[in-house]
Length: 146
Image (cartoon, rainbow, N blue to C red; front, side, top):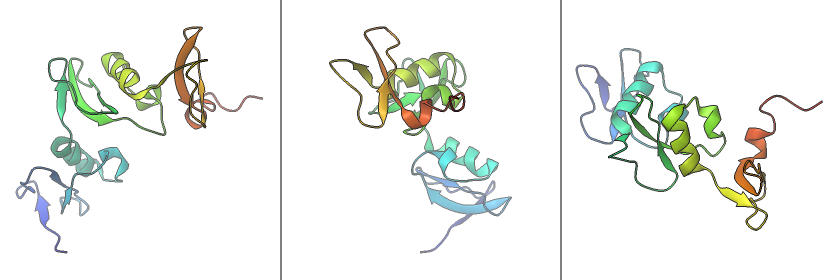
């Protein structure tokens, strides 16, 4: 497979790809896949991935699809982000509308009649129900209980 070299003067061009900047001021074109923060890219590579691979969103233009939310990182607008299966919304550094959107799109409601799947527990924040929390993501938030 041939690698296409790219830099600021020679961008990847095709939609659905970005320059990874693994060579510092240059890099290779990569296809968009998954979350940019999970690819182990340099700062420039991650910024290029975010710009080329994520979809802008706001209230009139919401994200489409299951388990995707708008980050609202700019206050009234943001980028569509996939739900993180290993971290809760509060652990993603979101605030305001982004946190609310993440909670609405990425959490599973639970109650005594609708229990959580294995590996999760119901936090019962509303008394009779709540949202499922992963034991891995939530039980250790403040450190181990002693």
